[in-house]
Image (cartoon, rainbow, N blue to C red; front, side, top):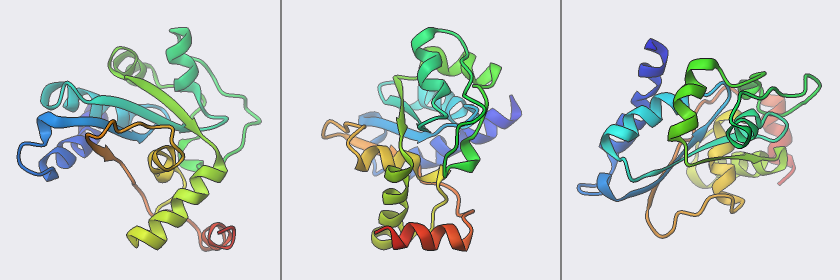
Length: 176
């Protein structure tokens, strides 16, 4: 519970940074999802402060346990042989407490490919001047790939973490 509360401050800080009056107008909040703790903490904060906002968890393809768990209604596991650039999001299954929170509070969960993640990392570097790790780039990847519809409203897309090794970053840049 303490970790979820701390992770929920991501949503609190994002809401505080919105222009005056935009909090109530927030249409979408999307964030990376591995075990689900970040998203669960953010869902709790959003439920209290921006209840109309759609909440979307974004995972890497192959580690889309939350996508599948929401569809089945129970915690699903990932193939132990699955691989992804997004090493920070390689949870085997949604954690118990986060899933209990996310199941009723998430609007949806989507998965992105490693190629979409690499494009988002390049976009973050070239356009935003931000070095972002693969797992922290999944929500931006979903937006850029057209998996998220902002419906003409304000949106918060969480881009987090700069923990990417230089050879991987060079490879992602070279793919551009």
